[in-house]
Image (cartoon, rainbow, N blue to C red; front, side, top):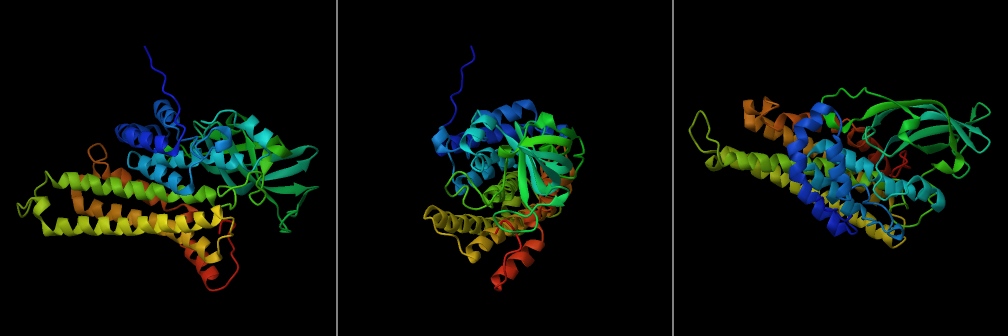
Length: 392
């Protein structure tokens, strides 16, 4: 007889279940990568653990995890499998996006708390205004989790009578809106042949002349729900640091376990007694602890301000962006250093996870949040300039 698993209702339950399924994700890791998307049983594991409902509002019966708790959740999952954590990080945007829609519309689009989101929000597409809504056309990349999502969003520039329509709130000459629809309304193309994050299924998707009702679209500067998860557009980015933090932790722990059994080929010195190995492990752990503390400290400062209804200062906003950038870059550096430490044994994809972690680390650092442009954008703000990013 199959025993039904009750859905988790609190942050503590979800985090506990994430810790419980992390070993299973690790066992599935090779298959996830070979499939280039999450297998159905892995999606079920995540859904049953309450991952996709993480940000759903308490008013709906959801757990409404804070940005700090969401980051911890993603970090925990990444110790099991990086692609699964990446898809989880995107999938739990359901609860965040629902707060930018009118309540009745949000409940219509998200009738279940455990619905996974996917989509590229930057305005790559075109939305021509028509009576009642928009005619949407375009092609978007990086639809992480598009192979299993329930809702697929697409960022667009709004046009009216063939001309770009100014934003009625900000006065900007171009209006950026996110269109919310179902994955079956798009053509999803299998383009995701990549070095790393292969299992994320981040495929291209496109559509021509899709009608999207006005109420099924939103702009980040006009939330319908109050609270810290909707007070600033960077809410969807805050949890991203969990991916490199969890990956780096898994790599360090893997090499520590390896050290207990390994002997240096040239010197005959057990790794656990080798000063070179000891120093390398200590350095990696030190770097991870430092960057992890920075991530959570800056998130904490920002969250406290938002809870108090105080607009975070420009300095506080750029600090979270810098901590995120640093987490991605440091995570890659740690994995690379451990890959070199392990040596030739690292290169075997069937025998060691090191090769997959290295490729995952390199691919995730190509995301916009980990690019050197973040340093220029945040540095401009730190030197008194106006932010040129919609997210800080």
